[in-house]
Each structure stands twice: as structure tokens, then as C-alpha cells.
Length: 267
Image: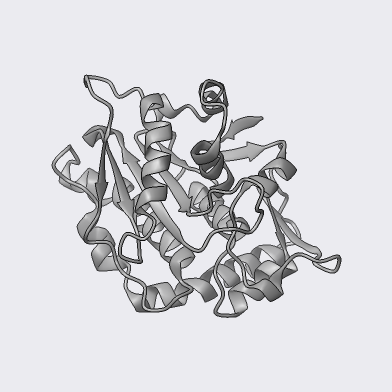
């Protein structure tokens, strides 16, 4: 059902199944309709007109926008070490009823080869509710520290959902030179949102900051278990930067729409 592309980009062939299962957060008036035409195919992500409407207004981001931006980050940070999971994959890991079959589901993700894995976390736990959930956060696995770190922009509201994802996936990380499963930490230094609708933007901004840290500052300082990305995130992810993320992502989408020569990657 899942195949890896390039580095951390993931293709989901049974996409309609994952759309039903994924917990997206949208404004009610932005719900999908017959007139909600496709506007862009970027790698394996299809965006619609309603996604532009969401970005134009003070609305919660849905899973399509987050998946698009994660796919874009993959092109900016083309490393086999990094995996940015689409929201649908993280949601299914959290809520998969067949725990024995989860190993086969995860195998194509090549988790054993990843040093940095970033999961968007949605608090929806109802697989029958397509647009459930009230909040986004981000769970990060760092192999060198044998650690999962949860970044929540709303005072740890998603802690229980993040721990559910952690418990589901931790045993599959296969950390070498360790006799124990990875630990879980709630990052108390995570930047906090200043309104009730920017949680998804914080997910994109924090994920971008961590990817930059991994490729730049980590190498300069030398990395290692004792050095994490917390200070980089605190410094970079400010309310003003997050506020600009909405227009930045919107502009990015429009720029790809304008490039008629852009060809979506084949599945």
C-alpha cells in the first residue's frame, strides 16, 4: 500500500482509503464539494481549490496542505536519513486495529534507515470520521538520542495522542546499540500559538526548523546525543514567522501552479 520515493516522500496508492481514515481539520464552509476542482498535483499530493481558501483565511490547516508542505520539505532536504510522514500515515499507525499487520505496513517506510523521522499528530481517534480532530502537533524521532520528542503549540493538549503514536511505532524503530525502546519527551520549550487556528502552521514551521537544524547546525556543532534542536526551534519559530507561513505556503502553491512545465512525479 505504501512505497517510498526519493528520500522521505511517500506514495500512497490506496489514497482514497487514507483520505477517509485521515483526520483533517478544516473550516466547515471549506468542505469538499462538486465544485472543489483540483488545482495542483505536486509529487503525490493533489490540492484543491478549497485548500487555497483555507490558506486565504484564518482556518485550521487540513491534512492535504500539511502533506504538500512536507513533500516540499523533502525536495529541500534530499536526505535518506530524513522521513517526513504524511498525516494519513501517522494517523493510520495510531489507529490501526491490526497491530500484527502494522509491521508489514511500516516496512516500506524503511524506518531502520532513518535518523530523523517527523510525524504530524492529529487528535482524531475515530477512523470513521473523515474530518475529525481539533488540534495538530508534531512528534519527532531522533535515532542518535534514541528519543521521541513531542512539540505541541498548545500546552501539551495532544500529549495523549502523541503517546499513542509513540507506543504504536517505537518498537519498530530498531535502535542499534540500545537494549531499550526509545524514550518519549514532551518538549516544554515548544513555541506556543497565539490564536485558536494556527496549530497546523506550527507543525510546518517546527518541522522546517528541525530539518534545517539537522542539515546545518547539527553538522557544524557535531551533533551527538547531547545536542538537540530545541534552541533552534525556539529562536526561529516565532509568532510573526508562523503568521507569514500561511501566505508563504499559499505563494508556493501558486508558483507551482504557474509553472506549466512542472510535471508531477510519477507514482
